[in-house]
Image (cartoon, rainbow, N blue to C red; front, side, top):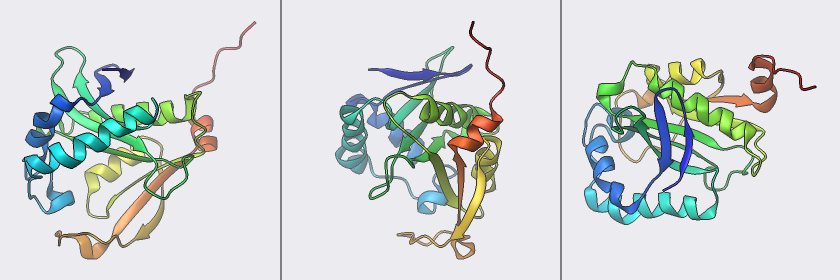
Amino acid sequence: MRILLQTARLQLREFTADDAGLLEELDSDPRVMRYISNSKPTPRQEIIDEYIPAYLQYHRKGPDFGFWVAQLRDSGEFAAWFHLRPEPGDPADDPELGFRLKHRFWGQGLATEGASALIDHAFCADSIDVTRVHASTMAVNIASRMVMEKCGMDLVRHFVADWPVRIDGDELGDVEYAITRAQWLEGRPPQPQRR
């Protein structure tokens, strides 16, 4: 399996067919699934039949877009997954950023660390030409919104998503955050000049 990137504490690697158990454990925590499925777990067979094949398909298409397992560098423990990929029907230069962390890792800055690294990757990768990265969540999901803001993303719109299940707070709608290449370049520390 290929490692996409490493941060101070995380390693993001490609998914494998053997990772269904990691997703099942993550998606069985009602706290993790609160703003996704109103706390209902994702059935294991759905993970095996739909999620894992979709994630593997991204890896076959190319190295820069997809879903990645996030493991702690010091122990190898599964902490989260992250994704960076165009949503179906969207242009490749405007990928969506997403993440889902195990509850025990909430509040430790790992979501911001991984998401920031993927934003950097999006704007630095040679094989993709990204002009903007966006992310969305329910308006009431303050923790995810804070991660987006800490990554330098700005609130760009409020909208109402068509959720397949009723979720507490969905009547308040959803929010989209984004960062453009120009904003990202503006926020980067000065690069050393080459001689």
